[in-house]
Length: 338
Image (cartoon, rainbow, N blue to C red; front, side):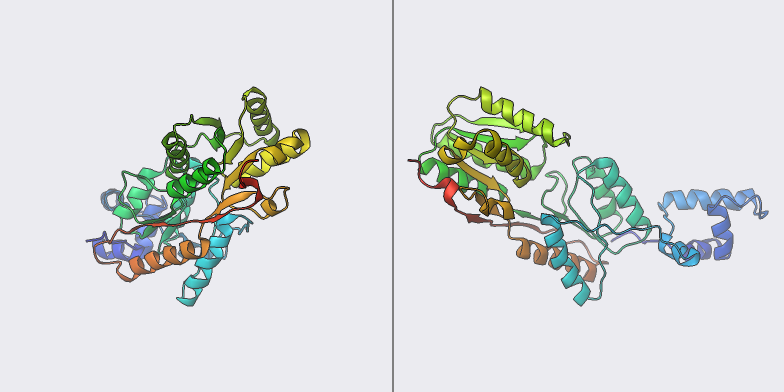
């Protein structure tokens, strides 16, 4: 059975006092309001035991201020967010959006913030170090669905793209079209989606008895020019590569712009592929082949799982792990080598 989520009224009933008295104790005003030390200690011990968190939404209604700002962004997740929002709205729910920048500190703060506001459920693109935070949400009976990546040792529902299979298929396409020395450009993030993409590439080249060649660029490196320098150095020190496979579209766009500026001949003589399509890829000459995630289906599956969990909130949680096939856009950059 799921843990009961206590309200201020529930705690007051537990001790046979008013909600106001409990509120004074929890806000450090027991001594000021002449509430006995014995009762104060019992209440504090009890709230610690049940892991009580105040309903900040109710508090905000009293003060007239929520202290929440909305920031709308334009990226792959915002497209999925719109799909989720439309489905949620039809079912009578509102969705709050936020960005964790794949940073643990920010992720933990956001989870605590919205948990204290007693939201009904979480759909999370998790940063690397919040496995225990997710586990605590699930243990407390709060519906959680993970998106894009997951924790292998944590039994939580998730919806992800078939990263390994899609990358394997795309890398095989390059190899079959004559590219035998493929450079794989990725990040140093050790999360499931990035590891699976790298594994798909590695499996493809090894299957053809070729040698993997990988450039890892630090995800923590936010400076665009420093990332370009890392890529430039690799290009200058890598002999005779004939294709580049990018594990993310933001790495691809940055590197392709550099090639266009400093090594324009490479765009005509090398093969290119990227995971995650981008509107800019059609504007390059040649147009860049890319793997597209099925965003519509991802959004629908996320909400299907979440609504299922909300409907059966007081029952044993049903864990579902969904992997969806990607679409591959074959364009000029991966045509047979001449």
